[in-house]
Picture 1 (tube, protein in one colour):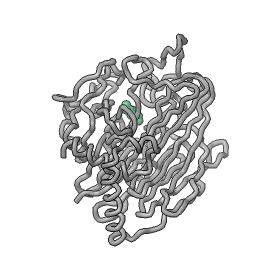
Picture 2 (picture 1 turned 180 degrees about the vertical axis):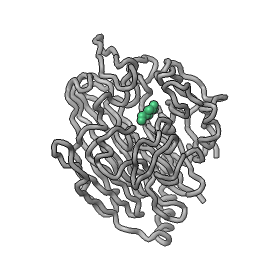
Picture 3 (picture 1 turned 90 degrees about the vertical axis):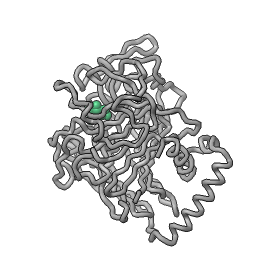
Picture 4 (picture 1 turned 60 degrees about the vertical axis):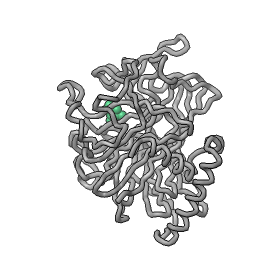
Amino acid sequence: MKISEYQNRSVQRICQHPAYNKKEFLTISIKKLFFSMALFVFVYFFSLGTVSAQKAEVSEKEFGKMPDGTIVKEYTLKNKNGMVMKCINYGTIVTVLEVPDKQGKLTDVVLGFDSLAGYLGSHPYFGATAGRVANRIANGKYTLDGKEYTLPTNDGKNTLHGGKKGFDKVFWEGTLDKLEADSSPGITFTYTSKDGEEGHPGEVKANVHYALTNSNGLQIIFTATTNHATPINLAHHGYFNLAGHNAGDILGHEVVINADEYTPTDSQFIPTGKIAPVKGTPFDFTLPKMIGKDIAKLPGDGKGNPGGYDLNYVLRKSREKLRLAAVVTEPKSGRELSIFTNQVGLQFYTGNFLDGSNKGKGGAVYKKNGGFCMETQVFPDSVNHPNFPSSILKPGETYRHIVIYEFSTKK
Ligand code: BGC
């Protein structure tokens, strides 16, 4: 299927989503609206006859204790189709995501740990929110309004995913949404990042809202405000394996990405500042392609880079505020993941640094390419590239990042 066909599908499917706010919704034409309503009514009545509707549920329990005794809770959201998501108020980590396959069998499709100890140890951001600034900042430095800021570095000489103690390693306040009839179960996490935290200016108030939609989407809305201009780039860092979190590598997954261009980097994954076409490179996913097809053409350098996909795509512009960024299909289970977002960039990462050292859920060993990430965001190191879309949030503005990981099945 061509990406343009996905685009049409994206418009139809977005119309069924409660994800967007009213203003965004109005950008969709009346004709499409009527079409989608008709489709929705059809799907609704069809599903009445075929799916044994369950009741949405939410619950919470203790997941573990921080070294200082703070209780970390695990929240469970279940939608009316039986899809389950669990998350904790440490790093807003999504610990479990149970999604049906083409036979309706639920399997956990995200990598992670059974206990808090795993998440408190060293791990590659499994399921977490990366921030304040996800992805890399070159040399841990930037200049904003004439002032130079120096950040702690944690990735060679660069700063990655918020630095030494990013948003993935802090405690968030969690509040379950009131569950109303037929609503999507949801939870809001809040965190106040102090002025100067990890070297950045301004106090930032951040929110992460998770909801499980009736159309089997994990919908994430990140919002943030500040009292001083500061870079903000929050990203969901879930590792997916659509065959199951412990099902081996993801090389047989088929991917299509809604992008003709990417941001080339140096050997440290720092953008050169250029925007280059994917055409003629192994990075071209404009038509569906197995992840494994061209991955051997990205062998790594024997130094820091283990090879594989780890790059930022420049998503095609879209009239709709929520665009379809990518679709990933796993042929055996039939699970298909569609990613919708209002962000300009998508970091596609094929778990190249996974090396089996993390003991995962149920004793799973996550080896190289054992999961993939689709991180919607602004471009890496944008704060140092005036030609990239800006990541600066100013006082009085609200950062609002929407991403929906929507699951369906294909025969
Ligand atoms: C980055 C990788 C990095 C990984 C850490 C990804 O978002 O693109 O380069 O190694 O996060 O887990």
